[in-house]
Image 1 (cartoon, rainbow, N blue to C red):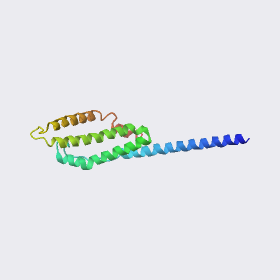
Image 2 (image 1 turned 90 degrees about the horizontal axis):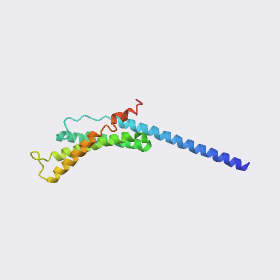
Image 3 (image 1 turned 120 degrees about the vertical axis):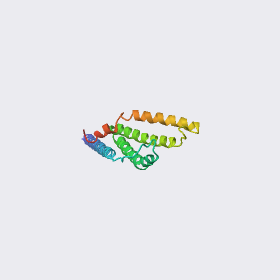
Length: 156
């Protein structure tokens, strides 16, 4: 009889622990969804001009857009850590932030050109590397897309 009581108590304890873990997992999924929604509903300001060729547009992007893009990427990454469903969203926002940063870096570098050439040969190599990285990021923006992944936050 004593053994039966211990088995019942142990079985009850296992059920309580498993139920608690399931509740925590549900809380994590809810929190992850909330973080993903916050990332997806951030408003990104328009920038007047092309940051690749316009210094004022680069500065505006650096001051207003890039910090928001990094914040959205961080929220999406937090969501992905809680629920791996949001990993594609985190990837998409990270690519977007990297593209913005690379564009600013390339624009800054190109602003040092004199008559379309660099005085330092290493700058030309860096330009080529940044341009290649930027092109790859542009080509992969839809793998996955921010828009597509954000639709999952609204259930559509």
